[in-house]
Amino acid sequence: MTPECIVPIFQVSDLPAAIAFYTNVLGFSVDFEFGSVVGISMGEIQIHLSGSASSGNKKAIGEGHVYIFCDEVDDYYNEIIAKGAGVFIPPGDRPYGVRDFAVKDADGNILAFGKSTHPRSDASHHTL
Image (tube, rainbow, N blue to C red):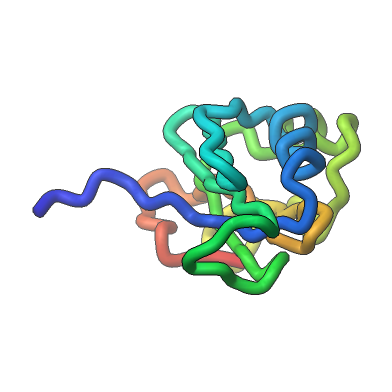
């Protein structure tokens, strides 16, 4: 078996509002809609948004948390703040070797975005 990717699932209370936030503010695109589950992506990053009408592995609303490694952390931060994203943790250089920040969606799901500050370090185990 060769793993290909991982897709976090965020439980949201208002699916249309969540879609608008993730697409209009954070810059994701809608990949699919299936009932009350919507797949969104940006580059190689995928997230599924699960509305309140979704059945199956339902989790508590707003308890999702994902850490996304990316480039241009400060430029992206400035872009999404200008579009209305609320800051949860402001940008900064962290002692664990990344420059990162975090925002929350309307339900409290946390999205952190970071970039290694060490040229060849494996920062994949560092998170907010």
